[in-house]
Length: 463
Image (tube, rainbow, N blue to C red; front, side, top):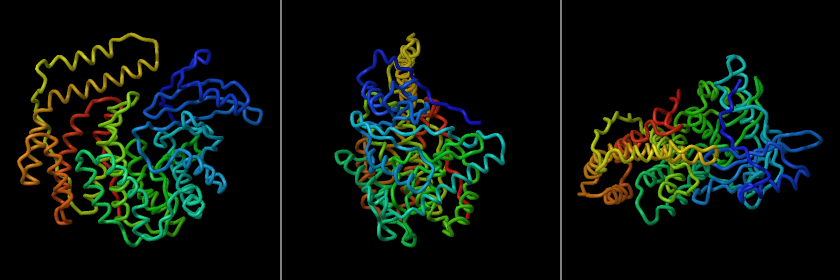
């Protein structure tokens, strides 16, 4: 059986907040009854749950809100809702969409039976059955004519290059605009590498869920695909790159075996190099879209959770590039303590002030705990920041040959180097960014519930 790990805040419907009231009233007016068990999910992306009467019986609904104003994604929530409608017409199991709330913008959908993470299924035969049913659903989804998704506004690529870059090019454009006024060389390196190395021989497009491996199951029964916010029309091989990322949090077993099963269903042979390229693409563009939020965070965001995702997906994207180049990512020594604050007790006091506040307010407790995790991260920055900055500046000088004195100067020098570098310098840039990301990753160790990501790498691809 699965385990539901989502934290929820019960809402007093007699004293609704300005955030919750529009959602509650939409559900009441649309379904013609007072919603029951109305609550908010306490996650990095705002969502609500409720039970309403549908066809004479009480059924669960999920309301999925936007990530926030600073989050930039190619697909709109309205298009995401239309994706569900296309799947429903073709019999692909996914939540039924009941409608859209316009303020706040959110999708109202069926809450499917079951839970996530098939690794929690105790019976190996049942676990294998559920995972194969997931692959069956993907194969069925990929068989839908792409023109139906084009009709809802998704770009339909024509050439192999367009198919390869279908998701990545819009993400590249978004991040370049976001960093127009400050250098961020890592994302520019990913962008240029993806543009230069797009496969030219994968020319069969399909609807790609991208963040693959997200599905629900109930017992030994697959109940549906979920979460299509980064979906697009592209190369179905990219699904196996997405599965590698999902496998870091919700293990999928042997992805190479799932790949062979998919090939037996579809007749499409999925090459190693395509999975490596799309691992770089999907992980790299995931990080691209989140890095700007580290410079313009919104007050409700769990800052460290997003930073964990930024650094982890950046490391995985670099792993995909290294696989494509046939190079090994070297181990990097841990930084040495070199405190940058005059009073070392100060960060710990911040954490104490957050964690010692007694409150029965679930939402306040969530925000205080998130702030305490940020305090833990800043404490590690205070302890190791001096030696990390020195190492980063030395690496930038060694790569570019330019003298730099500040982090901004180092970023500018490396960014300029990336923009002028040829393919023969890719391996040196991979080594440089591996050292930078390893130190960023070190700072995040032990910081919050997402800190397990600091120990993750992608499951190897077998030929």
